[in-house]
Image 1: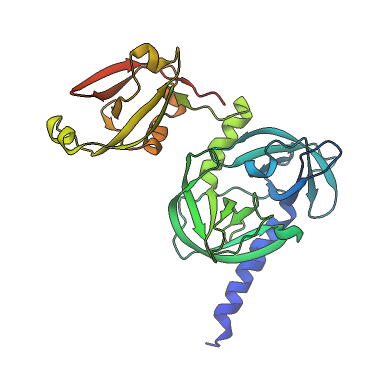
Image 2: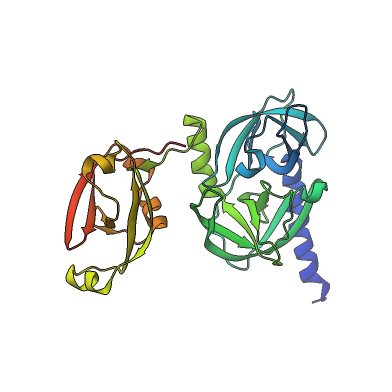
Length: 313
């Protein structure tokens, strides 16, 4: 077999993904001052015929005006349907006079480490740029600007640069498997994309509510190591917990008697080992439903029942 055959197969896969998806990739221009000054440029992609576009929250956050530039020409004013800084995703809508090309949404659930993936975007203002690489790792967690973890993140070595943010990460079938979101400054070949499965869930909530709903019981907290004597005395399965640093006045925790300095060790019997774990346990389904919080306060361990409210802001 000629040595060129594997390279030809690789090239055909990248070309096919690019040809099918690139017409749906757009440049996103965010104007952050009256008069159009201080604009930021990112990427996005159209995924419905009526002009819904996915991009990154950090591309459009606090923009006074949003415009998208289609690959095949045409500039359109865009409306922000909603954004979720906690997953760095945003949903835009354009009312184009003609139906815009779209790219199909796939799934990241069947991705394999080492699988070929393709990124398209507008790095450094160079529109419709394609790069290719492999899935370097799956199930990564990435810290959002809000401090929360974005779970189920795809790591890839498909080169990303400023301006790629919000563009699609594609499989060789031309389906979107992730939304390109971040690079590590100073590193090479370490790039990240939010899973399209996460994006689907966020899109659903943004269309329904204009925001992503999450539960909260009204505390500010930090990670804490449990003293060894606590672990043994209370027969705990975990040696880390969440320490309450502040209790919101009138919130569910305050009404339930939670105090500053309390250690939160479990929710409904599930160990609560960190702030990130706490955030995962406080899903939208928990809003206004009773849950049992297990607390250690000095020499006592006890349970309180409270009803989380919707997280504001």
